[in-house]
Structure formats: structure tokens, C-alpha cells
Image 1 (cartoon, rainbow, N blue to C red):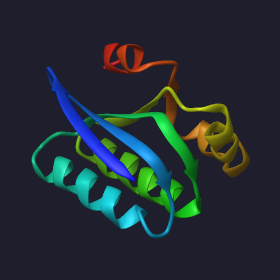
Image 2 (cartoon, rainbow, N blue to C red):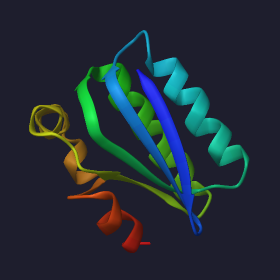
Image 3 (cartoon, one colour):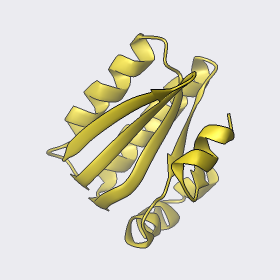
Length: 110
């Protein structure tokens, strides 16, 4: 898994490439936690190049969205591939998290 990041105004955009599973979830947790600790509570996670997520990946995102909201921000998901979106649908996370067709729409939603 690869993680990239850019800042667009007050919004931090984190891109995730590859697979998000029990082995890679701690890496994403560490990255997102560092952003929250730095005061970056408006997060967009670009999943356009995420091929797979397990329940471990879902937990990372759920914990981060809760923490971001407690800090007055939010975590929004952008460009989720259909096969990954199915995992969110089956888990019921679609009622908790906000999904956008692309990064621009997710950033504009703040």
C-alpha cells in the first residue's frame, strides 16, 4: 500500500493506493492519526486506486471519522471503486460515512 498526501486550503487529501488489510491498516492509522494530531481535521481520503479493503481497513476509516468529527472536522471518501464500495455497503458504513464521486466534490463539500 502507498499513501500520498496534499493540502488544498484547509482540507488534507490522503490518497491510498493498493490494498488495505490487516497488514497495511496500521500504516494508514499512523498517517491519519498524525494528521489529526497536527490539527488537520478536514480529511478527504482518495480511494480511486484502492483495489481492496478488509474489515481492518474499514475500522481505520471508522475510527478516523469519529475522531475527526470530535475535533470539528470530518473524513469524506472520494472516488471509491465499485468492488470496494460493496464492502462499505455490506458493512452498513454507507450510513456513517460520506461518499463523493471525485476528490474535487469531496473537497468542495467542506
